Image (cartoon, rainbow, N blue to C red; front, top):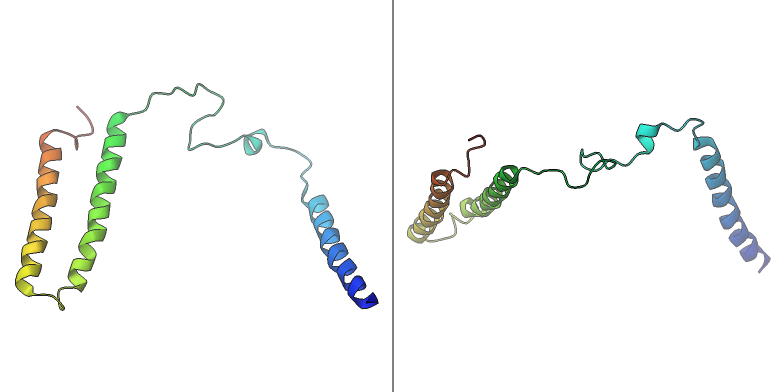
Length: 117
């Protein structure tokens, strides 16, 4: 019973001592104002929170994410080519790619892909 209580006491004292030593050694004497201020995605948190945001940038980012997900959907098509019917595989792949190209043409036609006016 004595060895159990000794080992429990040691298991509490040793980590607490190590944590105390590391906190004392890691303290810096000078605090840098820039390092202690929060960093929020490149925006200065001390200025106005109502900064103008480019809606065109947001639209381009959403279009990029949509086409990125569609690339992830195209990758398994190549893998299942050997195990599926080649005619159905070709028809479904061509249909999917035509839908993608139709969406790209639609976005291009409406001018959503143009950054500057």
